[in-house]
Image 1 (cartoon, protein in one colour):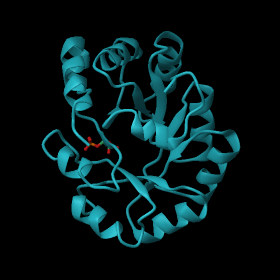
Image 2 (spheres, helix red, strand yellow):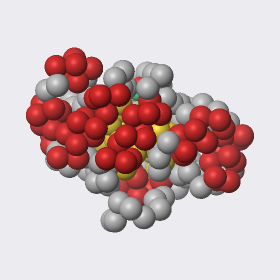
Image 3 (cartoon, helix red, strand yellow):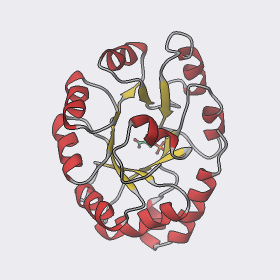
Image 4 (cartoon, protein in one colour):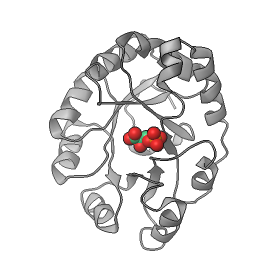
Length: 213
Ligand code: 3PG
């Protein structure tokens, strides 16, 4: 898949077994962190809109690391989605779902992985045209057994479980037929970024990229 083409949510999910959920506190960390992940085989990067520097970090990565695909996480509103797109995000991830957010992302052309945790939320997202969804918070809301239960009534939905996923339990999720990819923050611990230990982040990315699915 060429990374400079418009993407679908499914392509974002299929690129590697893990989408890193990244909290950046320093603009200076953005580019070396992105390069470290790409060097380890992970190029779909979810930068969470949780810090004041998040949008600037997206702009820097989009401009300086062309091998990476910048995504925005923690999108909660139409304004978040528009700001992320303007900062260079090429996909979005949300912790929940609203009709307004879903419609906005369709209107502005931002592929969205909407967050769901219940059958009703799945039905609302699907009614609005979304069939690739984030299951959040995955471990807290039922873990792999919840996805097994959903495989019956929601057989046409594909999930990205996120929240409490780790190298230890990622395999349990990735072996499920309705799971394409998992999300997790373990690839980019803040202490490694503060130390500038980019080699260790590359090592974590390589392990994640090698997970079977
Ligand atoms: C989040 O939104 O913080 C993600 O779900 C990451 O969760 P994790 O830290 O448990 O991987």
